[in-house]
Image (cartoon, rainbow, N blue to C red; front, side, top):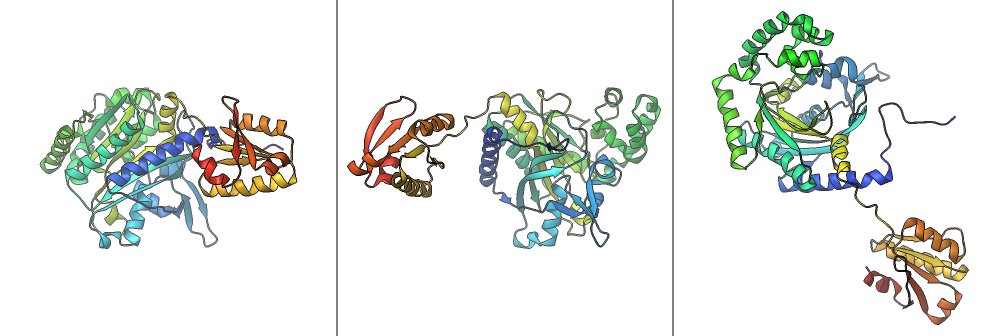
Amino acid sequence: MEFATIKGFKDILPEETGIWQRLEREARKQFHAYGFQEILPPLLEMTELFSRSIGEDTDIVSKEMYTLTDSRGRGMTLRPEATASLVRAYIEHRLYEKNPIQKLFTIGPMFRHERPQKGRFRQFHQIDAEIFGDPGPKSDAEIVLLGMALFETLGVSGLSLQLNSLGYPDCRQSFRDELKKYLSQKSTSLCSDCQRRTETNPLRVFDCKVEGCREVVSNAPSILDYICEDCRRHFDSVQEYLRLSGVSFTVNHKLVRGLDYYTRTTFEIQTDRLGAQNAVLGGGRYDSLSKQLGGPDHPAIGFAIGIERLVALLEEQGRPQMPVPDFLLAGIGSEAEKKVFHWAMELRKNGLWVEIDYASKGLKAQLKRADRLKARKVLIVGENELASGKGILRDMLSKTQTELALDDLVARLQKFL
């Protein structure tokens, strides 16, 4: 029997990992510049953490979570998103006592049982960033600018920033009532899921990708006509800080987030190159989540970047060249093989990629392997070279050869690079 990956899961092969490594490297560099620290929460959490934070009636909780029961009958779930885990860690370890403003990020896999499509998998990966402790518009603008800076560093083009404000629950209740009334009148044009959402959480209808539902919400009331004056001033200030930084954006009153905990500012960075699933970054403010999960009443804002979608965009610009060995050391004869093995270990300690032959093959076979690996140079050492104290250094690109003294060989080979 030949095994294959489970539907919705994929192997990230060596020729693909170069982009992933570059992406993570640039992300960590940007996070460092903005003062963020890395945190690594576990993949498995108590199920109630997600049902309480994300919302019982969300598709994620009701349909998509990978949940199991342990030997004591407790529900455990592979994390479907990172924010709830970071808030749990923030509360459990009292991180707010060390610093009133906490900036945290994490990079890793999430799990949702949903229909696989371009850039979307059942095991997917996210870059997640959160700012805890500041209720003001500066942190909103800062985290948006962090996301934009990362995309700019990676050279991703064709992106648009979409902004909205969801207000606070108290001030958006009148909007919910008005939206529910509007959607009820259009019920026959909505899909079955959105007919249910109309009763449970009408804002989620804005998230539906069914064309009929999209047409209905295109003429729906705007939440910006209903938020309170305090939320409006906050949203106006966020926009002012973004304009001061020279960032263009679109105010999109139909933009909502699909999770219960969001308040006030919500935002997405979208692309026109991935079809209907066009968001590569999504985030917003969630000022009540810490208190909701049993912690202090501290405000927060964050975002998540879908790595698979971002990788798909970067691959359109061309994959980076695969790394190749610096040297292959070809030893001919037992004594030369021992010497070559020792030199290879010493060169590797100095950070060089060095390959050797493992099967005592002849020179022709070793040169053929060097070609397959695209090694830059090959050092050839046999009995004659050991006797003379000079090896043969072959440049695999130009096919030229030079003699190289074998004393202090590690230092000599390093100079060639």
